[in-house]
Image 1: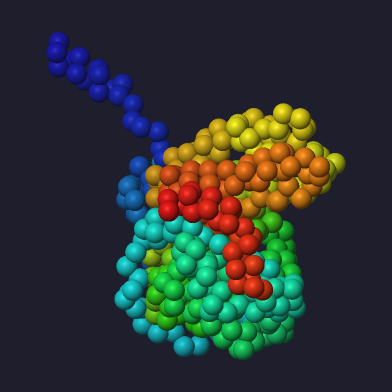
Image 2 (image 1 turned 90 degrees about the vertical axis):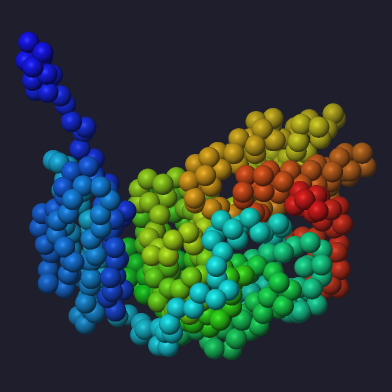
Length: 473
């Protein structure tokens, strides 16, 4: 009877439901071709159901359960148009479709002098680098200005300016930079003099032992996540061409230099987030292909809209771009919340200008200008701790590439008490954000202010003191 009971039990035992996930569902190759790895996680044996055209090769077409991978290799595209294909990976009754696209050669390759990988001075992980950044600052409205370095009225950057910033406690500089404004639109070639000038500014920062985050900023909005058709093909080709040139020029800097794919990409939903992921993948592949220290450099990719709320697109679909070098990617977001306090200098159709932020910094006679309680310290605490739980603790480092608050005191006339209260509130915001971000493993870069670059002096000591206090000085 015992044996029959065992047999009866075994006959009714149910196995775990089939599971199948892929590291990416959309693969993009440049015109030069190359190899991309698709990681497969399944609890059943898997296989590729149908093979596309001869231009795409697979190292294998089936595998066992667990974590496995298949390598896709595309030959150079010598045609006058894009190539596309799709194939399905199936396992245990589940099936996932992978789409593959390859561009045609719109621009020539600028990876003309790749060198062997060089790991010297590149030993830190992305998480270790973010931990080392105490306080960041942007060289704003300068290298990204359409008219060149002084196009928006700021002075030429000098070593003395960087020295002052460094001596004030800032140990990381973000350089918003334009490239498309300085490029030949028919060939994608960036002006060599501009590349050399940007490298010189990076060197100023390196001379003071600072970390540097060099990006492609707005730059006329060419990196358009809503692009389709021929425009999308051109954007992808330009992303590759630009970063091959930038990475080659900056290749010899050690790990203190980080490269960033974009700024505030106009991605807001799954289709545009997928396009953005493709742009980031092109960026990663282009930088890595140049070799040298770039083979190990920490790279920064932007969440859709650089929004914390939209960053979850990188944890589900389309997911993070793939980097063959482990632990070298950082996700960038920006912090201008609440926007009534951080951005408005007058009332808008959607809300009033707030001049006071923080539970202990509310005006008693200017009530409509107080920030709403749900947008103050508790919101900052819960949001930053949420980032820590969802990303930092899952080995996805974050940084806040921009934050800032307008000086609302200039709008408060005839009430010195409220004017001082507003300034103190702004200082409190700076200290609290930097402190709470660092407590959650997230370094933060102030967008503007504190320094008068024309006279090379500190012109807002209250803000600087607050930032330093938040950074732990």
